[in-house]
Amino acid sequence: MRSETLLKYLIDYQGKKVWVELDSPPKRGVCQACSRKVGNGIKITQTHHFVYAYSKKRVVKEPELALENTVELCWSDHRLGNALMNLLSVKLENVGSIVKVAALMPQPMLLKMDRLCKLWNHYRRTPRASAVGVCQRDKEIII
Image 1 (cartoon, one colour):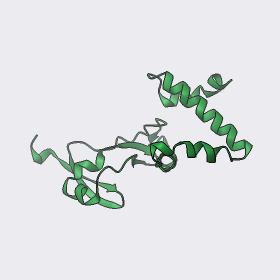
Image 2 (tube, helix red, strand yellow; image 1 turned 135 degrees about the vertical axis):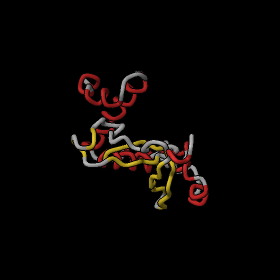
Image 3 (cartoon, helix red, strand yellow; image 1 turned 90 degrees about the vertical axis):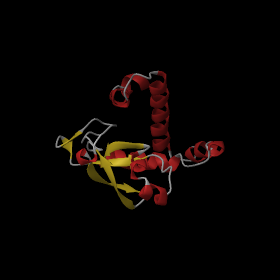
């Protein structure tokens, strides 16, 4: 591919703005979690990093790395992505601590956690189902 066909896109990587040259836009304007589109239910989508696998210094030198481990999310789903990233930032051997802390939550939160776990288990057993479809059918799964 000739470099004349590449366009530059600004990507935020851990607070550092880097220009990435691509032959097409890195975002399509569709939330990968809820499937809502820009102009039809949402104003913008954002690039969400589940993992920052590289140092900022390396990403400045190799800007294409800024797009690894990313998904395109609407604002509300981006907030959920950040919450999940924070929740799961514990070491694998310490995930039991999440359960211990969750067990201390008030009853309404425990009910939400129960539903979340049931939905997640169903989703994991149904690999071809989309997360959106599972959430739309959550009442039939839970009941």
